[in-house]
Length: 119
Image (cartoon, rainbow, N blue to C red; front, side, top):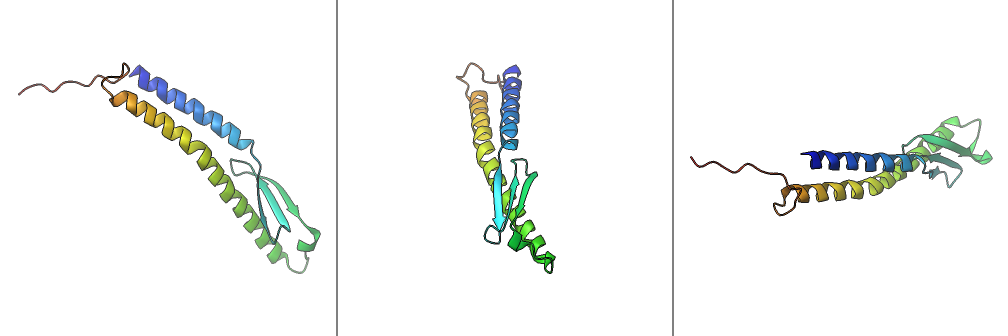
């Protein structure tokens, strides 16, 4: 049981490290042919907005708002893909390794399963 707890703690530490790394990423999304660009981090937090002068028409602020929303959603979608591709392999590897150790009776850290008692 202590081995399983230790593996869970290792997995948690690995996930926390990956999350810290993700927050340091800068992922860009754009709209309007690059007239509006936004940057988000791996935690999907908006970090920067660029608006080209030609995109800032004071008579059509709705269009500018749509461009900002589109660029933000594009950046967040890319950030989610990046996070998924970074975290899933680490999770899968840890879980697979832990389950294999837990279930393989030949492994020294395998869980001791009670033997069925004859009736």
